Amino acid sequence: MKAADRLVKVHEPLQILGWVEEDVLDALGIDVVGIELLNTFFGYQNDSWKPWQTGDGTEVLVGEGFTTKVDEHGDTFIYLDGDVNSQATAKMPKCGFYFDLLVRQEPIDENNLNPEEWLDGMYSEFTDEELAHIEKQADYLYNNTDRAIIGNFGQGGLGVQAVAH
Image 1 (cartoon, rainbow, N blue to C red):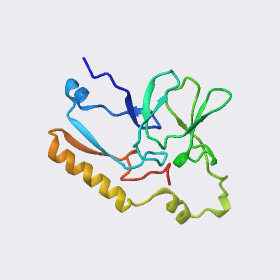
Image 2: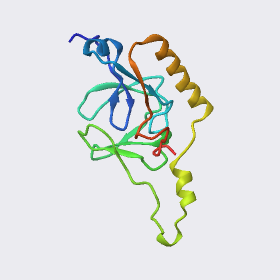
Image 3: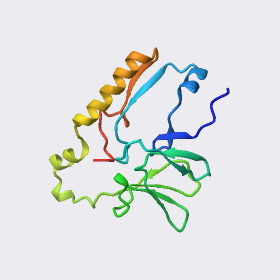
Image 4: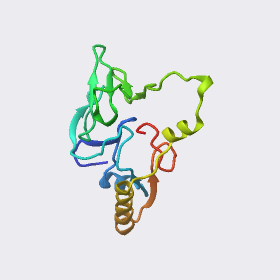
């Protein structure tokens, strides 16, 4: 297969998944495309692409909000909303291929469990901006492709972004 020479845009940073461009979809006979959420699992938008190098040296593009630090062991840490002053959200081991989520919660007090508090932290509703983003993609794909369209909202949830909220 002959594809255009370009860097892959990593749209899903947790697993380092890249967008598959139209020419590759065509060459492989792929008949499905996805509607993406406005923000990634780490809270930033995929826009204003910048270069980044994976642990094995592969050059890719990531959204401007993709913010990492590498420690003295060569492990890479990523931060929610790009806030490097907060606790890291995930870690990619040196020479790793994807990020592993880090536990960020406080210790659980079995004597003071509050289901409502847990529920508030687990689920969120789409904002008007997020819904407009989904609608714009759905309209574009409906009018410009013969491929099937799926809602690619992550983790199998209907809009749940447990990492970012």
